[in-house]
Image (cartoon, rainbow, N blue to C red; front, side, top):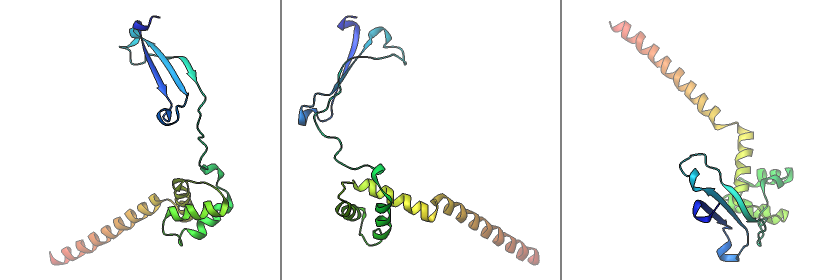
Amino acid sequence: MKKDECWITHFKCKQYEKTSCKFFLKFKRSLKDCQEDQANYILIDWNQVHNQDFDKFDSADRVTEDIKKIIKRLRGKCLNDGALTAAINQEFKTNYKTEVIHHQVKLLEVKANGPASEDAQTLVELLRNLLLSKITILKKKWSKIS
């Protein structure tokens, strides 16, 4: 296939400008396929090696039961999730992002209190019952007046 008969798409690493990372993917697609919604791209060239480290932060799969116990103990004492994350990272010599610890806090809250949707459903049922009892009382009062 000639170059003027196809589309060539070249993806570079997001860090290319900063680090001159050599990672790239190069795809091509025939111009005949352009009108088709399901046109296939073909990978024609690539370099899968990055020159920067992507494992700078610990992920949620490294959260242990000991860390969960500390989260339970400290979550009410820390002003925010950032302070909680800093305390956990310092105590366990880890490097978690605040979002990971925030998510763990939310998971522990759901585990302890149940999902918020159950509370909402209970509230709806209570309000419905209250409304029905008020309607019944009003009907009785109106029947006495009539």
